[in-house]
Length: 469
Image (cartoon, rainbow, N blue to C red; front, side, top):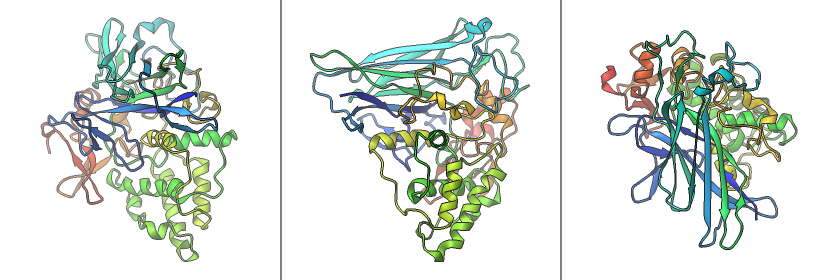
């Protein structure tokens, strides 16, 4: 029976704490805290006791694909050994970067004169409870930790990002901040790359599984708020426009509509635009297709569309606009769309933790995610074999803090807040006091995180008092 790894694309995040939590594996979750006894609970804090940013890890699962093409969690007989291999790279300072972020998909071209700046790392693990292996790349001769990997008691692979290192080897340091996009001779420790698995059943030859991809991205300072457009939405549009996925004619409220409404409404906690507070969250009325709720549906769809005017370089995907049109007219199903089970849940949940707009250049990955040739066939949100480690992050901001400083208003409030709710109840600037690029490199991990307060609001937590009130 064939095997496949899920999620097809997983996202870890860097942080400066040795502690970690797992990426969410179900809608509505912010992540999974794994305790020393192996038990798991919903994560409740994103900083450790020293106010360092926890890393977010991603867990890769093995599935069997049955004769009907349905992926089901693998049931491995006793004595089976799963062999994992991970190969990642950070190639930001070793490729030919355009002067500004590309506005259309663009091939990644290595600069032959800068290949000593390409940081590549790999590791191989086998079996259950394999100890941590470090993913160490080299920027010129300098070792750089790009992440760590290990397996759990069920032979699942867990990938952690790096420790948030951003640096230059030049002395004196070259200027940082002349560009929000490219700062030569500076490096960070984000990366992306290939996840492979080989399954060795007792007495049988090893079988290779369908591979997956991992991206380690900058921290998310508002993990409870999500982009109105995520990379799931972007890749879904790629499938639809290439006739690889069905068009959205009659959307499902819980699957297609509510996520857009909820995400737009939650922007009120991280962005000062008044629109977001006008969005209803009366889910009973919003889920009703009755003519009596037509005005509410029409008004809500219009308010969701305000993201295009209020956020920069932002466009809803065509399928989202079609879904909103149908929704306003009452042409939708009230429940959730049937799926293939846990594999589909993992696929979407992973991608829904990302941002799919503001591709100038973006946070986790950029405009190249709109290119059809990036994906394998049959189409299931899995990258093709033509993608090589480092491709997805090669054209991201170098280093990531450069864009976090310049793109403060109206770009990515769902991950890089413009404002936060202070414990006093007042809205305050997330980035305070004002900082230079170098200061942000030193202090980004000390900034606060928009965290659910248990009463439906998101408040600032984990801010280091060394930064001031």
